[in-house]
Image 1 (cartoon, rainbow, N blue to C red):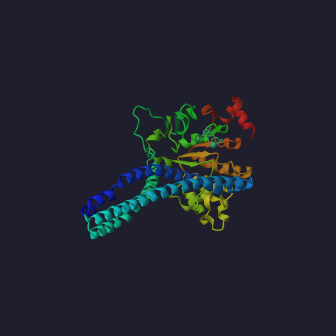
Image 2 (tube, rainbow, N blue to C red):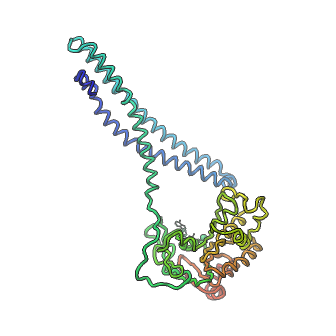
Image 3 (tube, rainbow, N blue to C red):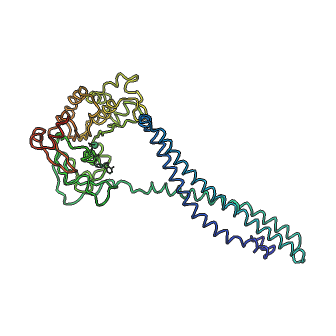
Length: 426
Ligand SMILES: Nc1ncnc2c1ncn2[C@@H]1O[C@H](COP(=O)(O)OP(=O)(O)OP(=O)(O)O)[C@@H](O)[C@H]1O
Ligand SMILES: [Mg+2]
């Protein structure tokens, strides 16, 4: 532009004039385009979710003959995405057309004006040619603005999404020790524990409230309660998968909120309702519970969990289990998950209904072996069946997020109607 102005400033102004409307158009385009680009990315997310769920749940989809409705959902979402993408393309085409056409018009105008000046003799033909050649050299950089704008808008929205994830506050590590809180005794102690899921309505009642429990060292407490009463939630609080929203939990007198997460999770072992195995060997899946466990300990854990079937697998402990352990049966997976929980001989053990998928005979065998492990640890075991309750020294009945009663199986059976009702069906 400096060269252009030096050659002929009136013609230079003619060329520069479209810059103002172009800038306004570009900023309008940016605002619109960023909205559409974001929408497209969200819709890609929705579409991926449907695909993922259909693939993971392929057996349910087939079993209930839902393939048509799944395909329809897929089609509807991809149609929506296609519409959005077409809208994006239309916007881009529009701005591109303007960015190409307006400078061309300006060059055309400069040509007409220049020719008149040459005819009037105020401008030499050579200068006009030089001017126009220089102007044409500017064409490509101007045209590529449209393309760059679209690219940078798309990377801006992608970056937004990336930072939405990265900016989520990190889980708090160890909180400072609270002064004045009296030390509690050994074992696992729940003091006025209250919990509310972070995504729950602010006005809704908490899932757990006023939980006071003292599990003495070496004791096993069975947690019994109707479905949805909060048992799984309570067990998840001990390894701090969720943070208590009120009260505190102490292990041997130490508030778990003040412990390093890694140390806490070494102290506490868990087995949850859905036994998740990873795509790795059977041995690796078990030693996940204690990285330094030796062969001997793994064997012992497997025998406690009655998971000796692994020795019959083609490659024993080195057998790879498929994605999510699909090649094993539900009960086999559950026993491996149990072996993983007990392999490190943890001080504290939390088991969420660990025997639900076993037949009665296997269950009896696991219980017999588990009894020895439980003798040496402080444990909370969620139980639905009287046979599992028998593993425990005492029972706590959870009802509507509160501890309704604590006592031995016999006491509760005699004194508590809800407990008797829960146990009688089995
Ligand atoms: N991630 C979550 N977000 C919000 N609410 C949840 C979440 N998980 C569970 N809940 C709610 O908390 C309540 C207790 O659920 P929880 O899983 O602890 O029950 P449970 O006693 O383990 O039941 P079950 O015997 O069926 O396993 C339920 O009402 C459930 O809807
Ligand atoms: Mg549960």
